[in-house]
Amino acid sequence: MMSTGNANGKTKQETTGLVISAAPVLVTGAAGYIGSILVRRLLDRGYRVRVLDRLMYGDDAIRDIFAHPRLEMIVADFRDRMVVAHAVQGVSAVIHLGAIVGDPACAIDEDFTIGTNFEATRIIADAAKQAGVGRFVFGSTCSVYGASAEMLDETSVLNPVSLYANTKIAAERALLDMRDAAFAPVIMRFATAYGHSYRPRYDLAINVMTAKAVKNGQITIHGGDQWRPFVHVDDIARALVLALEAPVAKVAGETFNVGSDEQNHQLKEVGEIIQRLIPRAEVLTNDLVTDKRNYHVQFTKIRETLGFTPTHTLTESIFEMKAALDTGEVLDYQHRRYNNYRFLSQIVHEVAQQHRPFATSPIAITSTMEQLMFAACDDWGREVDSSR
Image 1 (spheres, rainbow, N blue to C red):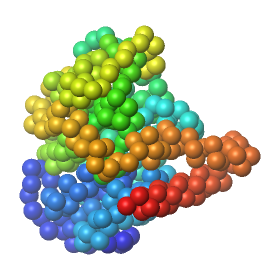
Image 2 (image 1 turned 45 degrees about the vertical axis):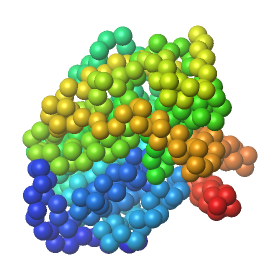
Image 3 (image 1 turned 45 degrees about the horizontal axis):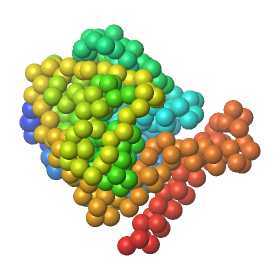
Image 4 (image 1 turned 180 degrees about the vertical axis):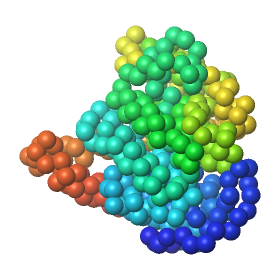
């Protein structure tokens, strides 16, 4: 149902601490890698869902549920205060996932990244608080830990090594500063995501390594001793629902690492797992460390507080992605639609070709970027249609 209408009366139906009501849950970034799974989970559980997403990467991931009777779509920019003020009216909670995600993508245009990841988070939270929304679940990242030789938990010192991590830290702090008796922010720091989604991504470590093993027969690992925590994208969506439904006393103002102790791996271990499952793939290593992140993370808090343990494994997910690549569900894993950095790089390049530097007129440039984004999304649709 394409709608921007407000929700009306509430019907109380107790779950584990949350009341499912006629008031929708607002989800930003709902057409993305995580959001497209989360929205379906919420709908399956009986929630009304209001989506606020400008569909920067297209609507393929949620197009098939547009007609769902409990789904509302607001296709707009969540950096716009007026849009956000309208979107938060009458909602029971906010799950804010919308962001420029990944270190390379964030580095393309710093102002655009800061405006999207930090300033927009404050705008949405301010509007939600003023509208009387009690719970605000925020999608952050374990990248905030940066580079560390220590075992890390939610209380550890943060050591960001990228703009992406810095914007997430700034947003976390702004949200926690807003906490009061009526407004409960919940920070969810995701481990490195992997797995297939309605909006596939092949710019994530396990996903791209699997794709290279399947399609190229070769994986190159830079360094390999770096530790990373991993978690399946569907398990992230499940953790978000747990944070939404938990009694407020358990989650208000709290930060949770999202993942499991068992899925901390060195990158060279991941290469070995993939090679074992796809034997024809050759694994090459070199000493050129292009990514300085190194963090081994504990997940005791989310397990003990929310009862979260992952249901997906690396082995299952590698086979899942191999099937998507082998069957042609994913035609070209190197296509820009599967890579945040490549997609945004193309858009920025096309804007630059118009000889209008970003510094001269940011509002005009943003509008131009968005027009090009929608044009790129139309191109994807034609490419997919012609391949069927």
